[in-house]
Image (cartoon, rainbow, N blue to C red):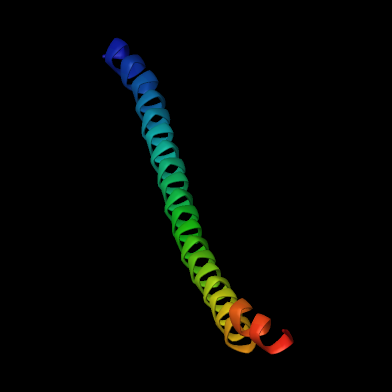
Length: 83
């Protein structure tokens, strides 16, 4: 009976430590995966905002070019006027 009590006395701390270790490992893994998902979400949002800003800039440049082209007279017309 004494031998069984000694085995039980050493087994309980062992299994308790093992359960604690697995719990901490699971919690750490969950936190890591949660942070990765959050980072991926931020990257995607930043990418979408950057694409939108890029589109706005390109549209603005194209609009300015159209205004310049409309305001400038053609080279042929200038030759006729100044000849």
